[in-house]
Image (cartoon, rainbow over all chains, first blue to last red; front, side, top):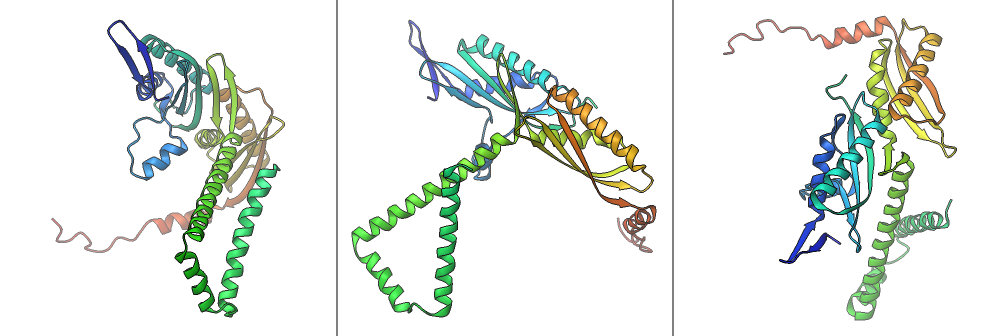
Length: 120
Length: 200
């Protein structure tokens, strides 16, 4: 399922999963300690093939409208990883609930690497 | 080892053996080129053999693709440390821990190079193998103890994990001062006389 539909008196509102991924990416990037969004294996191959990948965040929306988000992250050196992951999960959940009214089930974080950031 | 993995390995071994046999047969000239040509003509001329060959090719592609995906997926699962939070799951790639070790180890001046290899064992422990190149002035027992202590405390601090962390250090090389001086001299290229003359 690529998009979540909700019906109003005037018609239907469809939210594509790329929108969910973009909101999640922005919310994740707001947290101190996050260097960037990482890449997954599939996106890497698509990029190699020349396909432009907008966002590496994986979003699954099931038939009931429940949403699962998987965020690959690169974290800045010097920050506590569980703390940063926890803050990202909370911020992403708040942002998605506030902006889309979707039922967010799980926000899974995949820490792929550590890079030097501002905090040394 | 799971039965599917064994089947996959046997399949690939079988394919490679068949290719090998085919090449040997070709090189020894056991099978005349006419027979190969007749076989190919027969396969090409009728519809049924063509369909069978095409389906076999498709099946081979599907088998290799699913097997590759399974192996890659398995490796991906094995190479992470995971814990759950109320909002979902957090997985930390072992290469991220390797990056972390590379970054904090720069505070020890006696270490010239370091190659970390992090393994999550089945018992739930974290095994860290460090291959180190040292400068000659280093006191080895003191330095290795310090490195183990720093690595352990830093991983525990940054990851917040309770698992037992085992750190193994392998000193692969000790660079002497003379060796370093030679390298530095090599890096300093001699200036060419009048090298910049005439340039604007």
